[in-house]
Length: 241
Image (cartoon, rainbow, N blue to C red; front, side, top):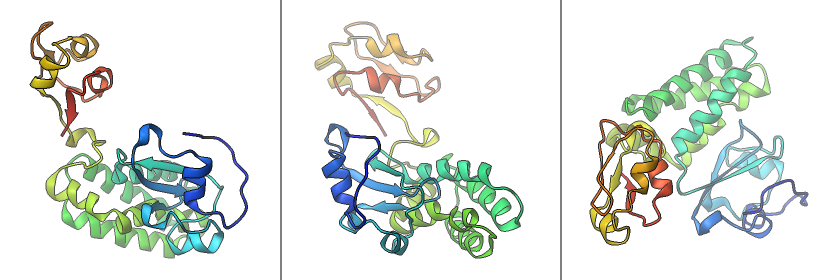
């Protein structure tokens, strides 16, 4: 709820920062993870919220002090997609001098692309761990030595999300477009919403079928999964599967 720059004493807990100074998660949503130290920092789960913030403690859980940045994620965040986002940045930041960083980070990003598109295989999870460890051990500088952190920590603490993407072709965070589908609840649409037609008016793909005061449906073949219908519906009639 409160974002910006803060100055705190070494040893303050993550909980004090997130829920005390930060004022908690917007709209009362559930805390899921916090990434510390910048793009190459690790993602720390709820179980470590009471740990003190200092160089050694953060390193113990796979993260770091780094630039001092913190990004808080709620229950709508897909940890596989989060890891992919930061790896894309780190791939571009690599100077390319050493092979482990230059090629390893790229290959991990390619695997994450495949997993978030619903094309992942069970061997991809093991490959991510193997490549990530190799990049850490073989890179010449600190960027390569820390670049796999977002992947390795999300694999360690949120492995079930990777397995859901690979085995079930399902994104628990409802974030990966290829693995989600928007559905209109007919009872809520006509009952609470009275077929208001707002979703259809705002759909850029013309994928919502139905007239005012009638039940609306989404044509999955046309739906671009932009989420606008979900955002504009005031009656919670649209949900994501």
